[in-house]
Image 1 (cartoon, rainbow, N blue to C red):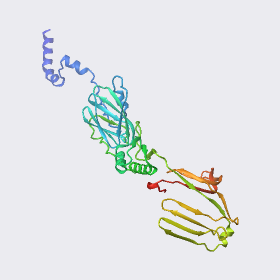
Image 2 (spheres, rainbow, N blue to C red):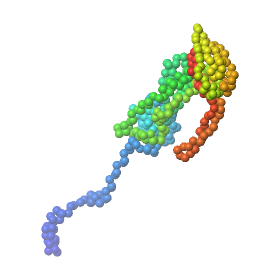
Image 3 (cartoon, helix red, strand yellow):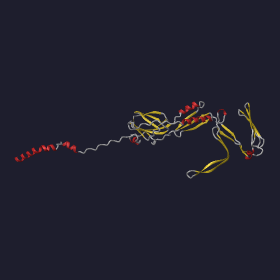
Image 4 (tube, rainbow, N blue to C red):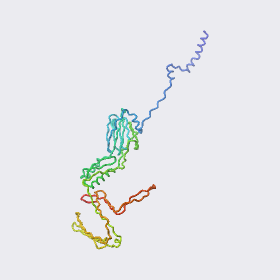
Length: 369
């Protein structure tokens, strides 16, 4: 027993330093912690860009969305919209129609860029979302001021805007005033539309989401300045009518070939103008004597057509309202086939016979254009 204990002590003295230098001593608690598996590193959440769909907003909305609010704005004008809470995000359906910028935590600056309609979804810091329907129309106040300045005698003209069109209503004195008002309105809608600069998405740091900057987003479209027109609903207080006396005659070609000369003589005395003309269409020495006064009075003596070389076909009286077309046709209409590029044949209407069309306009002082 004594020899065995001595041998064990000698071996421990020899191997002890070598074992201490190669095998680390680990406490029991630290060894248990090192044996546990390490968790995998977490991936960072993807950053939300400014071109995301509005579905990202609606998915994060809390509670029931309120009924959409409506807003109407004139093209080229802007307004401030104050919200009940601070804005977290917003989405404009069509930035080509409306642009919105955050000027305060709870205030939006809204500008009408082009004629059209769209909507905007706004999400507050609490998570509640609201929808705003926005309509951009033309500004009629500028045209109304122009009409009052250019036509001071016509104070009953009203202008209304309907999308990309202007509607003229009211009552004017005559057809000339109607034409002038329509011309002024046409010049007003032909003005080029100046587009506002687009918002900078890269420098936008207030959580703005803009969809479809090219106009493809779901929220309505702008007119782009094309197709703007004027709807004329003006009424004339006393509509003026113009009666045109028409004589349709048939002349023999034989008479025209054998005639060589004709005489016409006119002289004036005071306010009267007298004309003497030989009736070369009659084939005889017949003629006519007529007189015209500046106030509209006249008299005429016509020679008879005795030889039948001139035949009166019709003597209609065409009546037309000032500014509208009046027509008369001694004949008829027929249809002729016309070939198209795609091997189709269409019928085109043609008139035959003798006709007259005229559009009278009563000017100031009783003159007729």
